[in-house]
Amino acid sequence: MAASDAELDLTPAAHSRAFWALSDIWELTKRSLLHIRQDPDQLVSVTVQPVILVVLLRYMFGGAIDTGGGESYINFLMAGVFIETAALTATSTSTAVAVDLRSGATDRFRSLPMVTSAVPAGQVIADLARSVVGMAVMVGLGLAVGFRPHAGVSGWLGAIGLTLLVTFALSWIAACLGMLGGSVEAVQQFGLVLIIPILFSSAFVPTRTMPGWLRVVADNQPMTHAIDAVRALLLGQPTGGQVQATLLWFCGLTVAAVAMAGYLFRLRTSR
Amino acid sequence: MSETRVSPDGPMISAVGLAKSYGRVAAVRGIDLEVARGRVLALLGPNGAGKTTTVRMLCTLLKPDGGRVLIGGFDVVREPRKVRGVIGPAGQSASVDEKLTGLQNLAMLGRLHRLGRRTAGARARQLVERFGLAEAAARPVRTYSGGMRRKLDLAASLITAAPVLFLDEPTAGLDPVSRTALWEIVGDLVRGGTTVLLTTQYLEEADRLADRVAVIDRGRVVADTTAQQLKSRNGGTGLEIAAATGADFERLRALYPDRVAGGEPAARTVVFRVRDTGADGLRDLHGLLATVLEAGVAIENYTIRRPTLDEAFLQLVGRTTIDSESGES
Figure 1 (cartoon, one colour):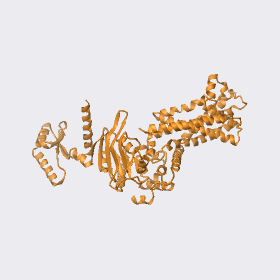
Figure 2: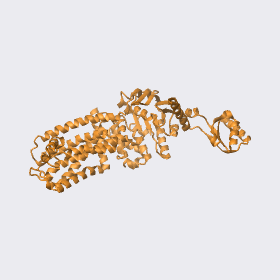
Figure 3: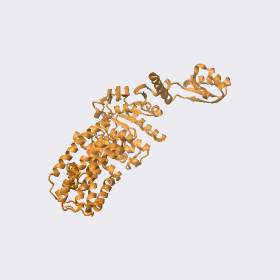
Figure 4: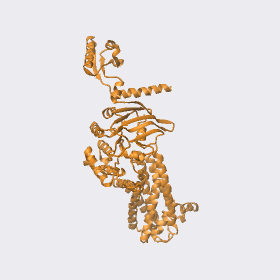
């Protein structure tokens, strides 16, 4: 046994701190991606609900909703579905973080000479991959039920980029939620925190049909900015400052959530 | 093996005055431990005694409120990264990822331990081979048996051939065959110079693996000695005889009043202390048996009782529990 050990040089490889920090994040991302492959259910949950939503809204309520700008309802709806998918994707981070904290996996990682914040970071980054899959399914479904976007390449890239930024920010918030809950089951309920703002936004109906007070809330919350920006980009309409508002909101939310996640992570693991 | 900062005969694990409280509850109240290179220390203690808290502090997972810990010469509070470079923690269930394969688990941990990409892969293959997991290496860990999981877990803690191993109940819930196999692996590692700190509920495990046994109760070390001494300190070998009737029991007990070491009147049993070494010991036992036979006491059954670590442990922990309870009332 000792002889076989001698064949391999087990001293740490010489790289910079930054190299190893990125390497740690990559290893943990790979781990979360392998989890998705082992558990394709995770993908089902981020696609089934939006699919039902698209079919329900498009065929049941769509006929009764006047979008105003002369666009069909399905064209109007898709941006909201994109952001809804992003939020559903992010909720899986809450569960993953909560499971890791309670199963001892986080402690195992903390006993290694690694950058421990790579643990939640890997889960958040893996969410982006899930989000891409979710978006691809939604685009395919949308096209099948009459979605006819007018976006050029830059419009598409912008819409995808903004959706990923929203996923990223919401995933970090979800990571915080995952560290807050007393149990994995409780954490799963917290996911609603991310979904509810989408119901009170421009996702499914134009905000101008809402009563005044609700319209003020809906028009000025980050989800509406993101949805309006993605919608304008997909439909080739003027974005009217919504892209900037979205960037500002979600970059700010990301910074705050990352800081909060770091604080909560230290708090939860110091016991 | 990773570099440490300890002289060849210096202690690889050293804790002095280690303390930790949760709010008002003192979980660990001044623990001193020392383990020399290549030695095995077993931490024994009832649930809630402070074993896990102690090990978590030694592994850098928990910051002590007081005291000083050096692992491989590195301070756990001031140099946690360096400590993490020389320790391999293993044991309680969840430290390997169920959804990854055995090889993926080991290769990932190798990279997180700062091994080069190729070295990490080669080391993973080497370890699954050594632990007899080669056939299962490409399967997700959730398909593994309990014994295979523990083996993989132990393999995971050996990625960098860490000079200090922390084994937290390494064989809890394993069948006897897997347990013995794991003990053999740990024995080989120790012969190769690895230092081990082990927590266990199985006293047999401590007896088999450990050079020294530290018994922890209520956050303190109540005994730090060898398994052998712990056993002999709490009563030596005894001859237990069950008499057929109450009258026989009384006569039996009166034969050698000064050698009665225990027994239960309700079960009509008497335990005589006997020596268990050398021809003198055997002659002594022979004399005792002859006396009992000549006295014509009716005997139901008899047995030679060797001291077990379990008994020693129960006496030690049971006594401190009773002491402190009577102290409180």
